[in-house]
Image (cartoon, rainbow, N blue to C red; front, side, top):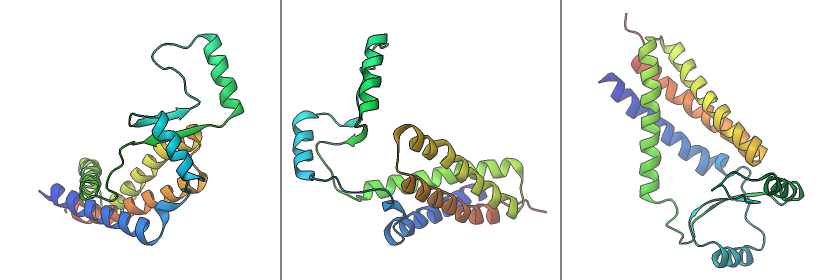
Length: 185
């Protein structure tokens, strides 16, 4: 029962930190800029992209193994540029919906549950719980965001802001997890 309580409270702390970091501190806005000439770009996308999804440019047909010629042609286009990664939804949707907030809170609670399970397995002290939780946040950032920066060219300031966001969030969650789940004498 302590684990569930710790996960819910730590998840709520993570969620609240996310609200502060994105809505008040602007950490979530780092590296994100509006598309120039948005109306023309939007019209071209609506005309040419009909399905929601994640698109990469220059594209390569991934339904089969590329021939040497196809790979060479793709490599030449990639070197010439431009390159882009696009997350696209042609229909649009309500921004900042209750569903999105619910999914975010739920994912924060589940992530805190996983970290809480790790701490419980180790029967750690408060300070070790905080340290381990923070290191989990750092490991997640290294594994995901650095890869996005490296392979997809996510902006450095976006990736750096994510470092601050993740490590701080897991530090704060670690205080809750470490306190509730600390080894009982």
